[in-house]
Amino acid sequence: MSKHIPCRWRHQGDLTRDPRPPRALVAEDEPDVRRLVAAALRGLGYDIVEACSGTELLHALGDRLLSGDADPGPDVIVADIRMPGLTGLEILAGLRQTESPTPIVLMTAYHDREIREEAQRLGANAFLEKPFDLDDLLAAVVNNTPARETRGAWDHA
Image: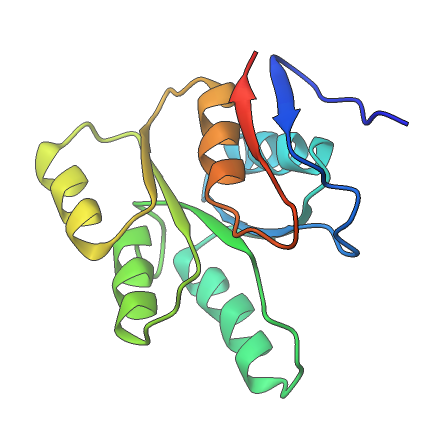
């Protein structure tokens, strides 16, 4: 049985052996962009937690850490750089200080070389400037979602 893959995607690998869907935390203060990204990732089989600010993103991560659960949290974080509360760069810096391996894909509407360089220095896994092609964002997220068993990579078809 093949899984329907939207847009121009084809899968290289086998997702069927992983017992749980990948999880993404999507933090974006623009509701339309947040809903679009979340819906596109849900279409690829991701479980999504949405946050409308850096503070909400931090709470979502903190709730997981404080719950005492064995829940490992999101497999990947997608965050806007400029949000109310904490910025995507501040979240990235904090995660890297705690040596969290969670991949982070950053988005920004501000085309600033210094911001891009800071994101790279802090260890962002991917950096996209708005407006971006949705397929580019999906590729960045899927290719930065950690492997579980035989999880493969995705390519543009």
